[in-house]
Image (cartoon, rainbow, N blue to C red; front, side, top):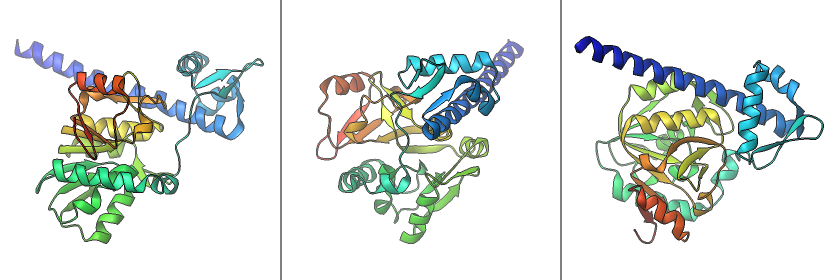
Length: 281
């Protein structure tokens, strides 16, 4: 019985590694595809194969999936063009948007969920950055992939400890991503994860625009006790690109308001606490 359980456990660990590796490879192809489409508007399928180094069958499957999601469409001459995909905005542009609303969300998140001595995962989203002024006096153990978060905590004289995950640098978000970053997260389990998202779909899926960021957030959720999401209302019912988790894995969702009753009902049905910056539900 013991040998059988060991074999089963080993098989499941192998399956998770294989699934994660396959997902990472697929999302990396998608990133390359979208980079090409954003740059050239229309791209022949053969150019996608050359740019990704993938075989025809893999690219055709990718194209079919992305077309079915309404993110790209085929052209009459056998090419591909963007349809519903919206690219990730640069960090500076995102930081300038909805500052007052994000500040209120950050204050509520810190007050209700963060306590002295906690181990916390923090991503590089601008909504989560609004939490930092309210926790700089606490002796927390923060693990992050964001150089902006580290710089801001240093500027504030943060009282706790910081672990910066290693990895590949992304200038657009001032973060690091990749397998090294994920391994660090896996060895730094947290009490709480605080994340922003690119969108939350009508099916309650958490969405991200960049594959590398999606995998980081996925790892944080998998290695924490509780996950807290901060998101502006315009991100609800938004299928931006990559599904990295679902609201079922989230303890609480903080926003400015929840005017879409159908969305709120679905979220509550999954057991998620919905918290407005002026009220809770």
